[in-house]
Length: 400
Image (cartoon, rainbow, N blue to C red):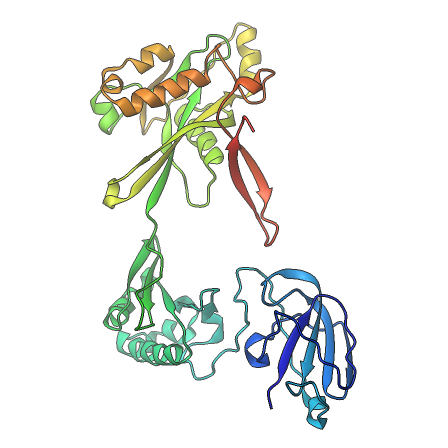
């Protein structure tokens, strides 16, 4: 006897002998049942109707009101055994969760808390959540290898695809057992490395490569009266070797928006407080550190209002160069900045400097100014994602 599952967008009433057909009808309850716990329930011979907060299963959406109809037979006919069909229906809390909530396989040697399924039919194993691996008497790599080998066999039988393995530095001795089973490094960060293995033997791995780019920012800041740009000379590095004046620059931290990185880097290198205005331009380069690519964003930032008030009253803006990295900081003419030898020899940086000068023409032009219609660049908008918690920054043309 096959148990059918139909998810309906609106409340429905089941009656003896009726049959509901939808294009999104799903055939196997054990595989597809994921709707929320029912808020009301009614039943008649052959069918059970549950009303909850799930949306269409096939669409994978969250929220809304749905009906789950459990029919004992394909034709919806009466069957006395249908009254025994009672299933707990878990809630799919996020669009990032698997479309079909899976029961933990008790045959696995790892606890349910250490395993996470993804929307690509993959599995992530976090060994930090495997208590027996943190027991001093059970941390030898051979024991872990046996456990992992058994799990791989089970996951392969289940049709899983990509397997992700997180191993902390404290248990780096387990890495060898994983590589012997075909795992390879995906990426590493302080305290953790991640290894992956593709299980299907009839296809090439579809798992993504590790992080391929670093993201940097350069900050253009203009003096509120003179229109000169803020520039620094570094103590070490290639720019220092050429005694080059450059705008304050740096890399974004993990989880940091470009706008936030620009504000932070300028504060660290010069002690000044600024507001992010817009991205003027950005450059993509390849073949950098460890053959990684680089995205570099030139950001126009506006000094905090307190500095404009200060200079109008005859005061001077105090620059506090970061002692460890910055040799000196000063306000210089943009034209003098742009004609430094190393810049004039580079078509790339000549174009970048031209974009900076254009952005600062007429002295100062900010997106928030009355002449903002003339300003070009990408302004930042931080907006809710909507279908899951949290917000993201989007950078859109200031002309739109």
